[in-house]
Image 1 (cartoon, rainbow, N blue to C red):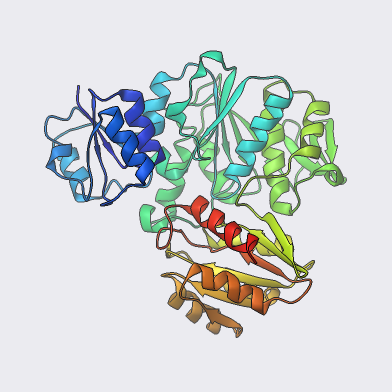
Image 2 (cartoon, rainbow, N blue to C red):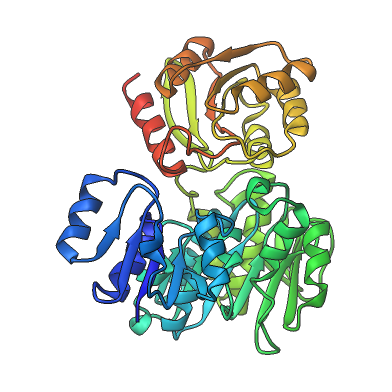
Length: 438
C-alpha cells in the first residue's frame, strides 16, 4: 500500500515515521528543510520530494494523509479527489491506532491553555495522560498502551479531514472570526468545528460554552450528552461562575482569587477544564489545587522579562484579532501597552481590535505583510501612534525605545507567522531571545 504524506512539518514527519519507509512517499512544497529534519529523513530511508507536490505523489497512491497547514483546494489534491484517492488528516490516521479514551478540545481561542490545564488536572489526580495534537506533540506519535486517556488540542484544519474521529469528551470553547482565508465563510468554519462532536453517541460527552451564541447554535444537533459551562448563568449540571467562585452544579470548586491564571478569558478556560475533570471523576479538592498552581502555557500572554522597568509579554499565539483583544485587556490598566502587531494577514475583520487599541494601547509597531491594511484601519479608528519596522528584531528594539518605566511591550500579532517564521512557536522563541539580550 502506497501512502503519500503531504507536508514535512511536525505532523507530516510523525506520520511518515509511524508508517515506515516501505509505505510512505513524503512531498513538501518548500525547497529546503531544517538540517536535522533532512538528515533524519535520509537516515530513515523514507522517499521524499522537495520544492512542490508533483505527480509522483499520486502515481500508484492508495491513500493521502495531509498535514493541517495544507489546503484541500490546492490543484494536486483536487486531482486526487477526481481519481478517487482517499484523503485524510493526521488525527484521522492517529485515531485508527489509538484505543484509549480521548478528550478533544477545540475553539478559536484558549485551546492550548485548556488542553494543558485538563492534562495537568488529570495528572495531579494520578491519571496516566498524554497531552498531544495541535499543542505541539502530534497525536500520531502517542503510544497509548500505558495510558489511561489522551487530551488533545484539535484545530479546525485537523477536523476538516476527520471522517471517523470520535472523542469520548469533546469541548468547544468559542467560535469567533478566524482562518477565513482557508474556510472562506464563518458558516464553513463553524461546520468544521462541529465535526469534533458529529459522530459522538449517547455514551459520549460534549462540553460547550453556553455564553457563545455560535457554539450554542451548532451543538443543538449533537446526539451525545451535553454539559454546558457559563460565566453568566447558574447550571444544575455544568460549570459556572457565582459569588466569586467556580461551581459545578451544587458543588463549590474554588474561589476566583485562588486561580493562578489571570484574566476573564482564562475563567472561561478554567470552567471548561473543571467540567472535563469532573466528568473524569477528579474530586473538587484536587481540581482546586491544580488551579492554584497552574501558571499557563508558553506563547500565551507569557511574562518574559522586566528590563529598566519595562515588562515584556510573549503572546505569539495571538494569531487573530479576538485573541489580541484578550491580551490587551489582560494587561490594561496595570500597564500602558506598546503593541507589536502584524504578520501574514488572515483577512479577518480588524475594526473591533483597532477600536480596542485606540482605547487601551499607547503605541503600535507594525510588522509583516499585514502592515498596510492594519495601518489604514488604525488610522480610520483615530489611532495615531503608529510605527513600522522592517524586521522582527527592529520591531522589538523599537518597542523597547517607545516604552517607559511601568509600560508593557506586548507581542500579540493578530496574524499568522508564516511571512517571517515557520510557526508561532518560532516567532515567540525568537522574541524571547531578543528580549533576553536587551
